[in-house]
Amino acid sequence: MENISFGEKTAMPQMNWKNLLSPHRIGTDAPGKITPERSPFQRDFDRIVFSGSFRRLQDKTQVFPLSGTTDCHTRLTHSMETGSIARSLGTAAGVSICRDADTGGAHPSDIGAAVAAAALAHDIGNPPMGHAGEEAIRYWFENSSVGQDIAAYMSDAERADISKYDGNAQGFRVLTRLEMPDRPGGMQLTCATLGTFAKYPGSAKSDLKKCGFFQQEKEFFAETAASCGMIPDKNGESWKRHPLSFLLEAADDIAYLTVDFEDALRQNLIEYSELESYFLDIIDTESSRSYVKTLTSSRRKAEYLRAQAIGVLVRSAADEFIKNHEELLNGTWNTPLTETIPQKEILKKIRSRSAESIYNHPSVAEVVGAGFELVMGMLDIFVPCVNETDREKCGGKAASTRSRRISAMLPEILRNPVPSSAYYRLLGILDYISGMTDRNAVALYQKLKGISL
Image 1: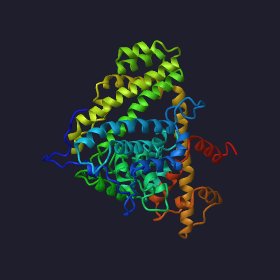
Image 2 (image 1 turned 90 degrees about the vertical axis):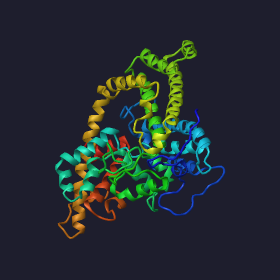
Image 3 (image 1 turned 135 degrees about the horizontal axis):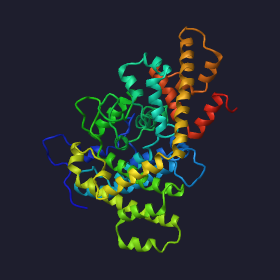
């Protein structure tokens, strides 16, 4: 990779790598434990791997909801593969960063570990049924009578949180509050990992397309941004992205664009010849074109081509990151790295073909549509029941037996939040639903509706 000179004086504010790799842990002033055999960022990785929220990703949708085959990826396997790609990207970029910038003694592998930890958690806040679950929550809040009733008791900022509800903000909440809830800062991850995790470093009131945190976690994010030296926007509701978040984004793009295509082949949604054509165009070497002809099965050929394509894309994305280091540190770079690398046109074709043949395929759309109704249906059941039991506690009309029983299904910490308000009660219900796996959600909804017992 080319030599770079990070942190040169410029007319505009600029982030620096010593702060961006902050080992400070959210929720505690105690110095982080640093040992030769295990960096702070490796500890982050391990905490995430052993968490219940990460484990539940094994039964959450990647592309094919409630797939009956173990061949297709779930959110868990996708997250693990994204973490692997992210580690390679971070370490590759880290060679140049650690050579040419003041990192406070960090090693390239430390940067790889920080990006890998954030990548491992990047989908940890996704509700059941994938993006359909997120859309269902937003639609329910804006259009259902129950959603409108509870919205009347919220502030503008609180309403914005639910109107723009997103798995990224829920994920930040999981990492800083819901996992290990008995201590401030939840998992108490490093600010470097949390900053890298934040693809959308702003609240629902910001101008960003999506929100990266809810109002309840705003102080945690402000602490993260301050420790990392992230540049605040003038609106006071968002910050410029942590540069390493672009490597995480690239890892996610590379993982799903290649592996979802491979899954589609196994589901007979595309022909092998199509996959071969796209992936060989990415790899672009005669040796690969010759070698793939020696393999006997389409499955083995696809696996080989996918692995080679990922390697090429990782090198290109890391080079692109280094090439644009000044804009990244200034906070003026806003384009996904996979949209500026030499292979961008091929990736655009894969993205378009995937939307046509995979994401909008009837077998996927049918289950996603059902999942949409499932999530809204559970909200219609839980929210009135929890509100009714809360009014009873405040001296109002006695709650029905049904409301008491259904409310009791939620963990105590979620049905009786502190502080208690319509906003915090709804967040508690959303915490409960978003933490479910796909099959848990289906089974519970069927029981609540009396379909199965």
